[in-house]
Image 1: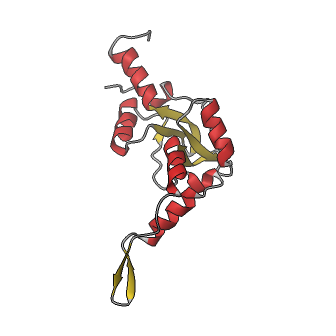
Image 2: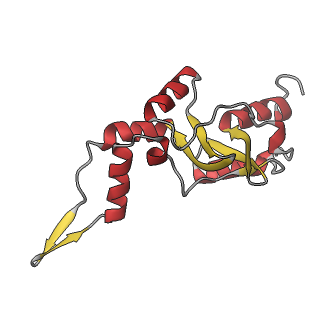
Image 3: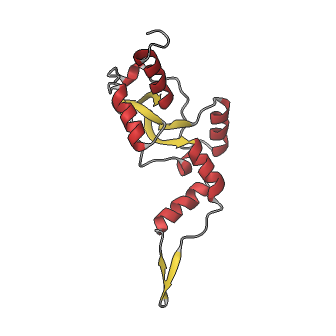
Length: 161
């Protein structure tokens, strides 16, 4: 178990995007830096996360069908919530990062949090990256790769300490 703080392992130089960034610029950034996710930061505060999975989702989402409905007498009953379907449409036709990013389910870490606790959050929430906060301000990111590198170095004797 690694009880050292996230701040020792995080990447404070990883690029971020603003919520107004175009999808084209986002794709270029991810491709040119070989990234799979970035934090969305407006005015120094994390407002979301966008991943390559969001982009894949956007690519195929336009193939989705309208909400499932079931006729009931002279009524139409929606089996899938309209709010969920509207979010699918918004992502499918996203123009900016704001349209595509995950906003409500962002799981930040804090600089003083242990790497072990950050790794538990990643595993529990099935995410590959956590934005790291110093107070309310964005400080960097911690990724699964950082956890693996720390395990190699500190638990299994790889590299130097």
